[in-house]
Length: 352
Image 1: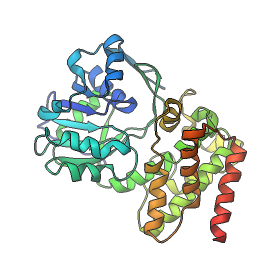
Image 2 (image 1 turned 45 degrees about the horizontal axis):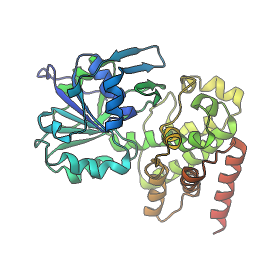
Image 3 (image 1 turned 120 degrees about the vertical axis):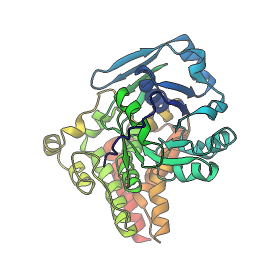
């Protein structure tokens, strides 16, 4: 459900993006390119790059912009949130608690904060550290990768969503002008779990070491994804958590389509293949950079949901363990071998 814009829209709100990596630089950069008043907060390494080179943004539909940042538009100083009208938190999930603690001394009471992060629980973690803020769970459905230093590429479709909270209505025109529409929702828990169902492909893409389009064109990799999604959907049904439609297909049908032979998949899922040929998952990017991944906040969320229900999630647990192994060994998996490994994990769990 889209929220209607109220007449008292803020003409040029001050927006701070806290945790400017791939997603933060892309979202913040799109806002900047449309004339918004934006400050990016991130690491010195990226600041040095963007002081020497323009912030270049592209997408799979042909969008391109170049913005030469001024020194006050990218900083390492969290205190810049003191006069913010909106804070977008885009740090990796493992850094959420630290982000909240960094923001807390500077944030004005009532300031809207949107968590644009993977996973389910980040908004709750921020809220526990920012009791005076108006924290909203958000969702970035599209993929962003850094093609080269300072160049961020948006490779898949989708628009931003956030839980409806006080103060966000007036900010919607700013997002609309940037070409990144923000939709306010009443059902963000369902939205987050539905997005996570799609994000279950992140570890598979990372383990495959091939672009998303190539991976999704391989039936064995799609079968791996279907196994993880079916397991998750069964747990969500037991927990009474509904899903919402984020793609051309209802989420309940996505695993069936993923498992189809290539000819049928290509015919029925053409919109799912509207992916830039170079697009890859953020988890792949983390592995390539030697950074810890977010697998514990994606597949690990499914494992924790299963535990809360007195059940197990062998497929998602196995994918979590394989990614952690890959962080050390750098091993990548052909589709047939990964599928056999996941099926074996399921059989072993059934015997236990």
